Length: 492
Image (cartoon, rainbow, N blue to C red; front, side):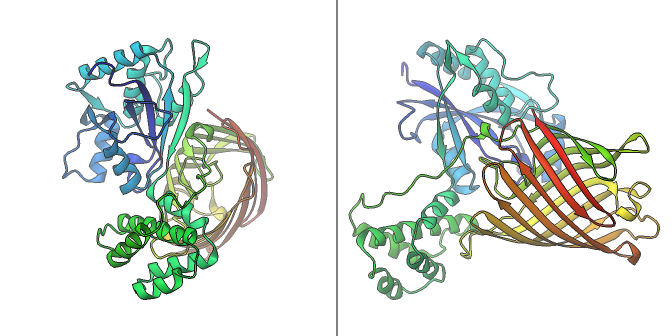
């Protein structure tokens, strides 16, 4: 009907490291049928853009076709609840809604244009003409400036939100407000963190599938408010666990028990604190140039195409994770600048449990493809492509995360080293404040054929600064030699 959409929002779904196609997040447009500053209306219409992928295609074929334009793509119109369920409830990704300052005539023009786009097919390019690029072009219809440049090497969804957060429209900010839509996992952890130790013990009983009689005996010691808090948290945990385990019947008896007991209590009894969160555009920008000084090599220079590392700010990114795409490390040697190391892809997720419950957290893992020397004993003359895969476990304790990994590397045999090396790593991440973050790790390496390359690497590195465009890093490292480094990074 006329003026069905009263306003427009852009929605950002945070990155999803379990699927390479979703590493950089996703962007969609939402058409609000009422006041967008109020509670989100799940029945509002939304505009999505994505590749049309045959179900039988594997991940490698998808990545190749996605990068080189091997798939057709199109816009689609769906109710917002489908995306809220897919991203927030199934993939456990956070959503951020940016509400836009557009007149009714501008809203109508965008809506009319989307109807023209729905039947059209495009070529999909994962790194350029993706969801971010296409949605930006739709929005540019009613803006007097560009949000993206088609000549850019990479166009990430994050960049669109960074752009619109800085734009003025009629002397007013284009973005009028933000709404955080937490994932099912975040909603559970937020409630769990607000419980007393006695209440948390009862949640552990739910996790252990205790009988309803045992649960009722423990919960009856609480006040009505405390009972409601326990039951609401238990329900959130069970729903999260069912998603995590992909089992819709998990904890069925305890879920029914908690639901029935909660219904017996007054409706609006609990008052949970909101999740402390910041929107995506407050994180470091994805590309980076870093200049520093290292105690042995002297001047160092780094360039990263995107995206973030373990020390980066993580306001809207997966906690205790990194996603590095094409990062080069140059160092001076004999008055010349030489390539020291090149990371093509380095993905790591610690999946640390913050509650100790059985379904909170998962395997920590890392995949790394780099070109570098295989050992400090033979760094320059022993360069090789190195593929690393490691798995382990991480645990979170408030602002500190500890982890352990076991893994292996494949590489060319240099000076008889063999084609494989084996790794064991212990690490600790500490977020001391918004500005200070530290990472310590100890790594033991053994080579399949040459034991003289075996040894340990100890490293501590830190970040100071919590700004979108700069920070200061320092590191101390001990392998064959002790080295120290300090550097200044600029993000763009």
